Length: 341
Image (cartoon, rainbow, N blue to C red; front, side, top):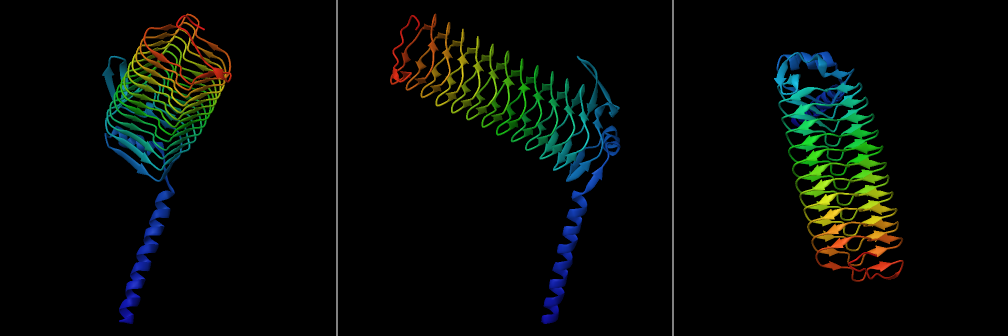
């Protein structure tokens, strides 16, 4: 009996050691880009995990070309998946079309990342990834769901002039430097909630077509949402704006919610149009709140709003009911009128 027990324990020990050795060996696997592009050009699926990619991943090495309305683009016809990988070099995938899923989950990018003017037809997932240097996705077309959930951008992230044709998720991400989504189109659901913007962020001239969630965000730098069009429901509740905030000349077609948010410095809503119900209750304005020329076509809820500095409603138009009950201006009861303040 003891002999059998010893044999059993020995087998378990050998299996455990073998597993550990295999794990250690696998996690230190070095992969060179030539091997990756050799498989791509053979139209094979790419699937790597726990690897270190040595050198630049330059998609100009893709042989297959596809004729499109934008000219002949390099085409990756099979899915690409990297999980728990480290990329030591740059990634250049501009002017490339990806027909299947593109996945870089829980990866570290030590070089520059560039997918400018790329086209994604399958899903794209960069969730829980870390970008050490600048990230560029300008003039990119996303015809698929996009995930950057809980990703960290250490340098500037540029997503301007993009078109998101499906839903996009950036929830719980961190942007450490000035970043931009300027002049982008979000056709469907956008979840960019619980995000930390440590520097300036620009969304000006963008369009939002579906449910849009910016709730519980922290904006430490200047925030620019000017000249935007929101066609679906928009949520900015429980946000903290630590620097100047600009919603100048934007149009909110769907319901808009700013409840329980804090504006530490000046906030500008000049000539902004609210077509549907606006909830700006229990908001704290510690800098100037400027609503000059704003138009409120539906119910405007300013219940318990605190205006702790200058407030301007000159030439604002309230075309429906509004509620300023229990609101204060510098500690005194706030009593607006329909003709501006």
